[in-house]
Image (cartoon, rainbow, N blue to C red):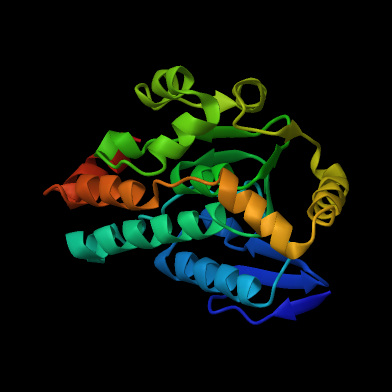
Amino acid sequence: MNMIESTSPSLSISRDDSTWTFTLNRPDKRNALSGDLIDALYDGVLLAHAQQASLLVFRGAGKNFSAGFDFSDLDTQSEGDLVLRMVRIEMLLQEIAASPCMTIALAHGKNFGAGADIFAVCKRRVATPDASFRMPGLKFGLVLGTRRFGELVGRDNARAILEETRNFDASEALRIGFVSALCASDKWDDAIASALAAAGVLDEHSRAQLYHALGSRTQSEEMALLVRSAARPGLKQRVARYLAAA
């Protein structure tokens, strides 16, 4: 397995033949998504696509996959800085969602916000039985991944979860289709091998055509929804109130 140079120390990228593994490596911050980590993920996915990877694997070091946005630097960020970070994460989500590769995310522990959104855009979504998820963005007025979530789990399920911004556990996630399979972490290698085998059934061109045909056609609308919600004046204050209450 070869290590690929990353633009951020908080992301580890390894390559084993046509399998690229992206490991969020900020365990002390619960793999919260800083600006540097978002950019490194985006650049890494583009590089994997350019080198014709077959399988992209997303996982997290430490106790969970990802705690979502890193707001530890909120005091030093302008509203424009925050909006740009939101735009960058939407660009990343769209790149993964539209990937010509098989994609698999492996989640454990407590996962929030944009971290759960990364999990959601992968074609295979594997979680440990004790994993949980929460999407609190609407608490500060952010519409990120909302339509994709509704398409994945159904509008009624999405509305019931998002209007209360409540946690949902792995068993509920499996029932509504947010999770593809439950699997203990010591069996993740088997899940990755299964995804790689599935990626190899079709040739690269046919697989890409299949994913394109089944993919979303609403990327521009997704971005517009995000930008309108993030650009509403007072984003920084809303985030600060959410963090204080949390």
